Amino acid sequence: MTANILFAATANRWAEYETPLSEALREAGVAFDLRTDFPPDEVDYIVYAPNSEVQDFKPYTRLKAVLNLWAGVEDVVFNPTLSVPLARMVDHGLTQGMVEWVTGHVLRHHLGMDAHILGQDGQWRTEVPPLAQDRRVTILGLGELGRACADSLARLGFPVSGWSRSAKSLPDVTTYHGDDGLAEALSRADILVLLLPDTPDTTDLVNADRLAQMPEGAVLINPGRGTLIDDTALIEALDSGRLGHATLDVFRTEPLLPVHPFWAHPKVTVTPHIASATRADSASRVIAENVRRGEAGEPLLHLVNRDLGY
Image (cartoon, rainbow, N blue to C red; front, side, top):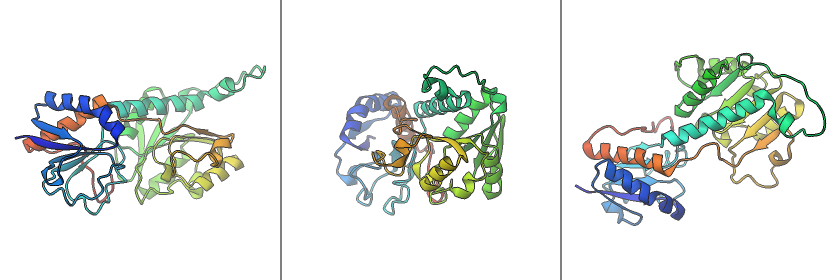
């Protein structure tokens, strides 16, 4: 039986995915018809980007699952017309990209690289950074990306703490959970990395009170979601010296508006949402495996908990 697969994303994504996704489906042994324009009542699976034109799922009466192209599902998970399983993207390329970006920026701040890269002014700066074992890193969010980053940093010798809503256990990582554990995790954050999803519970999680719980002069790194931080509180903490620097890859409005104060702030580094991205080759294999599973009656991978929002 042929699986009818609708690719619902922007035109540039179709050009990027058509060939590798078709090849991955064939390698997975799936009989398929992959298009961008099926009649809704003939669609079995939707390969989905939340910014596509498909926003009402009711006409897709034989739909078996929606397979998200992105790791984040906040723009689709609460859609009231979506009643079938939703799978988020968990992809080796996406995970490895995040590990490399986070590790690079943690090392940048740990080693004080900016003073040498940006400070070419004739001054012979002899300050020696501490070893990794003396710089504490805390990661908020211990999902797939958070766990991978925590493992990478722990293997470099950093004392790594991690926080999540529910209890989790990781080798070589001190873990905390719940409201009581958050304050303790923040108190250990010489460098804080945010890798939480965007949910109603995480909006403005890092506010003035939480920033005050961090060590003075700490660094904040956010490749997670722009909504995690109260922007006004962050700028105030930087201006007061409570925080030493913020490196931000995600923002409430993207692209970040040219007039936003982050651009000109001397203690803020802006990167344009490049910490990690879905790679078509590896992501196509994840999608193909889920279609194969769906057709074989096996459990789908990376299903979203609709109540939690991730």
